[in-house]
Every structure is written in structure tokens, then in C-alpha cells.
Image (cartoon, rainbow, N blue to C red; front, side, top):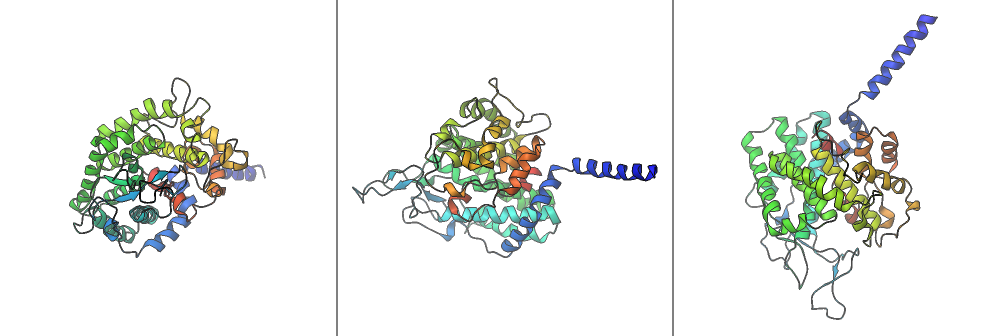
Amino acid sequence: MKCKYIYITFFILLASCSKETKSDFEIVKDLEKHRIQENAQKFLNLEPVTVTSYTSIRSAGTKHDFYSEGDYWWPNSDDLDGPYIRKDGLSNPDNFVSHRHAMIRLSQISGALASAYLITKNEVYLHKLMPHLKAWFVNEDTKMNPHLLYAQAIKGKVTGRGIGIIDTIHLIEVALAVKVIEDSDLYDKQEVREIKDWFSQYLNWLTTHKYGIKERDNGNNHSTCWAMQVAAFAKVVDNKEQILFCKRMFKNKLMPEQMAIDGSFPKELARTKPYGYSIFNLDALSGLAQLLTTNEDNLFTYQTNEGKSLKLGVQFLYPYIKDKKTWPFKKDVMYWEDWPTKQPALLFAGLMFNNNNYIETWKTLPEIPNKHEVIRNMPIRYMLLWIQN
């Protein structure tokens, strides 16, 4: 009888050890498998839709130039033909956002199909993804020009702004999907190189054009999202110089200048949507850390001299993500009821710090709602792409 108990105990311990040694990839795969495969089937047979599918008479660019209009800009009731005026946090539903919708669609397709391939190794997923990538980045008739000169324009004021660069956060998971395609060895290197060339050109524009420089130095979540894009695109095209720049920016600019000593983000709390912007910035910082962390340089555990860190940022916001009713600041002027959703910062932190409370809370959060305002602030949708990179 004693031997029987020893035998049972041994297998309980063995099962426990197996669970503890499960890779982050396997954990996320188990959490996301059903959703990924369901979405992949939904996107499997869609035709490509690019910026050339929609045009706006207000765009100063060509049909190949991405164009959008500032979300918070409205007609002036005192001068309907004059320049638009700003209403922070209030999105104007009549502004042109068709190109952004098309880019988000590409991101959703890329994330789902590339993730489905990672789970199943079924080549059909990447074969179905490739026409979308070629349409956006290679084919002369349909591709997007590799710049953002005309993003978030304002009627009567500007034809484009550096602040519009935040629109291409939805190319991050597209770029990570390109990495999956390259690693699969299913395609000729020249085919992949043509797509990567587009990202190289866009990366160069982001880091040298005056719009890119201004966005980099914006100081709030826009700076974070600039760095997250640059890091992702640099990883895909193996630009070590920009990867190193983003690491230094995270340590020397983003963390010390955006975070307060209690872990909050004062510049986001000052907005008319303090809750949504706070968790959005935390997600973006966590995504940036996930992209750049190595065994030798872990940005999740990095601390400034004042003790500011991602761990502190998650600790500050976690109670309010778990129970929004405890939020001590003002409510968001729009979409208050739609947050939180499956915020990636919680899952990244749960895995990195081995904190099961974060992971369990993430599991209970609602799926991303099918609302444009929420989706545009959730560029991290397919976690496997981030974990495997």
C-alpha cells in the first residue's frame, strides 16, 4: 500500500512539473487556440482590400497614399465652411477613416492566419495570407506608398500630421506575420524580400522624416506607439541600430518621462478618456518590452533610478482593470462601458512575472468588442505572434 501512494505521489509531482515547465508559447496557444482557428476560418477566403480601394476628395495625396482625418476634429458651428475645431476625446463619425479600416482588416487577417499556421503548421493559412501582403506592399496597382504624409489631416488646417503615424500601429502584427512567413521557408526569398523592402522603406521614413521625429518626441502614448512600430519593423528587417535605439528610448525617455512614481501615466490621466488612454499606453509599453526583451536585457524587469518600471505600471492599473468601479479618476467621455477588454499587458505581465492572478483576470475579461473606436486602440490582438518573436 505504501508503494502505491509513492507511485501516485510521483505522478502528481510529474504532472505538476510538466505544467510549470510549459513554455509561454504553449500557455498562450492553449488560451487562444479556439479563437484563432475560428477567426482564421472566417478570414481564409477574403479578397485583398488596400488603400487603392477607397479615395477621398479631401486627400492631398494619390490613390496609393494612406489618408485619414483627425478623429477629434469637427465642423465649427459658427463657420461651417471654415477650419475644423478640436473636441478632445469625441470622435467625429463623418471623418474619412476607410483606409484605417482597410489596414485594420489587413492586420486582423494577418494575425489570425499567421497564428493559425503557428498552431497547426498547415501551409494553407500562409498561402491565403500572401496575396494580401503582395497587394499592400508589392503590386504596383494596389500597394500603399511607404510613408504617412497624409494621415490625420484636418480640414482647413493641415493635409497631414506626424500625429497620424499612430494609425500604422495596425501594421505591427502584419510585420510579425511576415516574420512567420519568412521563418516558414515556404516561399522564395525574393518574394519575402520584396515585402520586407517596403517595411525597410517605411522604417526609414518613420525615423528620418520630420513627421516621424515629431511623433517620436510627442511625449505621451504617441511616442510609445512610435517606438513600438519602429521596434517591430526593425526586428522584421533586422535593423539592429533601430532596435538598440528603441531599447534606449524605453529606458531613458518613455519610462522616466511618462510614468509617475506611483506607476500612473499623468499625461494620459489628463485626457478626457483617462481610463482608456492609461491602459492603452500600458499595453503599448508592454508590447514594446515584449518585442525587445532578450535573456540578457529584460525590459519588463528594468527599473529607473526612481523605481519606475512596467511591473509598477501593471500594479497600479491592475485593480482598476479587475474592477473598474474602483477607478478614482474621472470617467472617459466616450466608450467608458467598452473598457477593459482583453488587455495584453495583463497577459504579458502574468507570463513574465509568473503572476497567475494577472492571467486569470485576463481570461475573465470580455473579448474585444466589434467597435471601431476600441479596435483601433487594440493593435495587439494575436498574442502568439508576440510570444514566438
